[in-house]
Amino acid sequence: MIKSTLLLSFAVRLMLGLALISAFLSLLAIGAGHVFLNDWEFVFTAKAKNDGNSTIYIVDGERHLVHRVTDSKINSLSPSWSPATNQVVYVSNVTGTSQIYGSGLDGHARQLTSGTYSHTLPSWSPDSKNIAYISHETPGGEIYISDADGNNSHLVPLDMPVDSMPRWSPDGTRLLFASTDKYHHNITLDGAITINETLTLNAYDASHLPDGSHLSAETNVYTVTLDGNLHPLTESLAFNAYDPVWSPDGQDIVFPVDDSDGTNIYLLNGGGNPQRISQGSQLNRCPVWSPDSRHIALVSQQGGITGLFVMDADGSNRRMIVKSMGSTLYQPIWSPDNRFVAFVLTEKGQNKIYGIDINDGSRRLLSPAVPGTVILDKICYSN
Image (cartoon, rainbow, N blue to C red; front, side, top):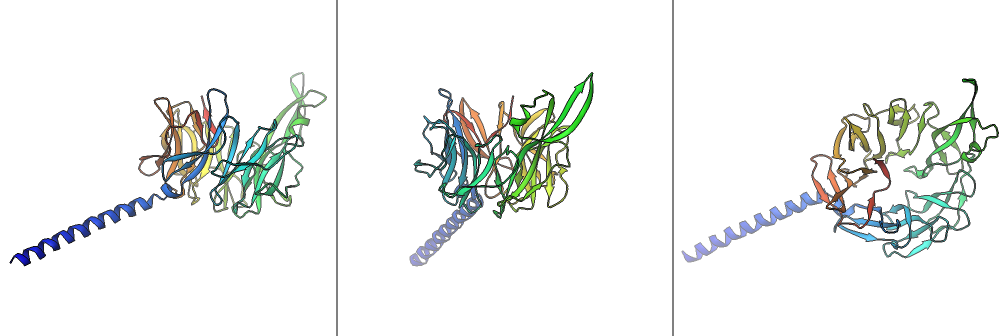
C-alpha cells in the first residue's frame, strides 16, 4: 500500500513537472515569435546639448542595450548599418571636411574617403560589398561607388546633381535618387510672364543667372544603372518628388510629393505612372516599407494630430500607432518580423527608444536612457 502511494505521488509529481516544462516551452515559443529581440539592430545618433556633436550608437534589441560606436567629442552623422558584417559607415568632419568612415562595434574608425572636398550620404549595397555615396567635387554632387574598404572608387556617370542618399535596389543593379535638375525660368515684365521655359541646370548655375530672373526648382526621382543608364520616374507629375525608397521585394517605390494638397505619398508600381496613396492630410512624410513589403510606416497628420501611422502598401487601412508626445518625430524603423516600429519617447527628461506592436499597440523598451537628443535616421517633423 505504501509502495503504491509512493508510486502515485511520483507519477503526480512527474506529470506536474512535465506540465511546467510544457508551459515553459510554450512561453519560449511565444517569445520566439518576437524575433526582433534577437535580430533587431539599427543605428541612431544622439546630439549632445553641450557641444552639439552627434554620436552614433547601435541598438542591441536582445539585451536592451546600446553600443556607442563613435567618440562623443567628434561630430558623426548619416550612419548606415550593415547587419551582415556588423559594420557602420558614417560621415565625420574630423579632418576639416566631411569624409566617410567605417567602423565595427569596437569603435575602431577607418577613413574611407579623402580629399579637400566633401563626401556624404553613404549607403551599403545589399551584399555589403560596396558603398555608394555623394562626392561634392563638383557643384551639386555626384554618385560614386567604392569597395567596402573605400578602395576602387569610381564615378557613376550622370549629367545632373544628386540631392538625396543613393539607395540600392534590392538586387544591387540600380540606384535610386532625387535630383533638383530642372528650373522653371520666369521673367516677369509689367506683371506678365514673358518667358516661361524649363532649364536643366545644377543648383550653382541656377543661382548665378545673369539676368536675375526668377527660377522655381523642380525635383524629380530617377533610377540609374551602375554604368550610368538613367531612367526618369516622376517627370509626369509636375510637382517636387524626393526621398524615394525601394520596397524590399524590389517591385515598388514610394516617395513624398509636394502636390497641390500638401505633402503626400505616391507609389510607383513597376513601369506605371506614380499614384497618390495618402489622403485627407496636409502632411505625409518619411515613408518606410515593412520588410515583407506589405505595409508602409510614415509620419503624418490626421485631424490636426501628428503621429506615426501605418497603412497597407496601397494606402488602405491607415491608422495611427503613436501620437506625437513632443515636438519632433523621426523616420520610422521596422523590426525584421514586420511587427514592431521603433520610436523615441521622452520620459522625465530622458530619451528612450521603444518598439510598438502595430497590431495591439503594446510597447517594448529597446534601449536605456540615452544622453542627448536621440535622432532615429532623420527628422521628419518638428514644430
